[in-house]
Length: 274
Image (tube, rainbow, N blue to C red; front, side, top):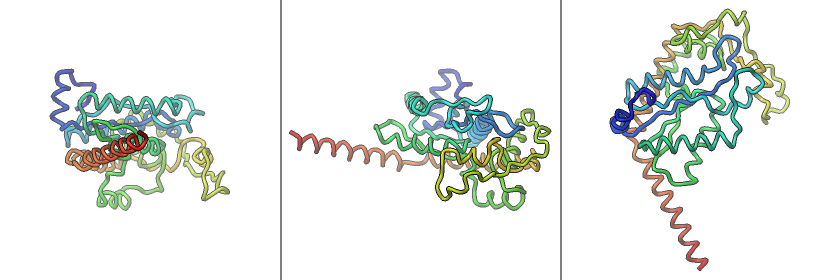
C-alpha cells in the first residue's frame, strides 16, 4: 500500500491491516556516472519497497530524497541539506509516521552514503522514549545467502560499485527509459587512489579522491535481465525483513526496559540531591 495513494479513511484502516508497520524507502539526489538518473537511489528503493509490500502488506512512505549527500555538492542536480537540519527533519518525519499510528518503522536505505546517518537516526531514538520502534535495512542486505551466491556466480561479471553493473541493471529492469548507456562511451569507473597514502586512516575526501565522477565499477555489462534477477532477490529479502519486524516483540520490550531503568536512575539521583 502506497501512503500517497490512500484516502484518509482507507489510510486509517491500512495502518491496522499492516499491523502498524511502515516502510520509509530512503534515497538521495546525486550523480550516478554519465548514464543514470540523479534519483536512482530514491527510485530503486521505493520500487523495491512497493513490490515487497505486495508480498508482505505494509504501508510504504512516499519517495524520499533527503539524505546525506554532501560529497556530491560539486555536481548539478544534487540536493544536499545542512547536517543539523537534515537530522531534525528526519527525526520529525519519524515522529509524524508514529503519530499516524505506526508502532514499527523500517528505514529501507537505498544509498550507501546514508549508512552512518541511518545508524545515528536509530541510536537517536534512545534520547527520548517513543511510542514506536525504528528498524533499518540497507539496499541489498536482506538478500538470502543462496540468492547472493547465485548472483555472484551466475549474474555479475565485474567487481561492482556505485553506478556499476548491478545498480545499472536494477534500474534498467523497471525504468529503462531513464538509462542512457550510450553516454558511457566505454567508460569504466576505476579508483584513482589519490589518498591511498593515508590508509588505513580516512578523510572526508576519501570518496571524491577515488571517484571524482561518481562512477565506480563497470556498467558496460549491465542488462535488464540481470536487473530482474537482482530485483527479485532484493524484494524477497525486504519482504522477509518486514515479516520479521511485524512478528518482533523484543525490540519494544527492550525499549520499555531501557527507559524504565533510565527513569529509575533519574529518580534515584533526584532523591540523593534532596
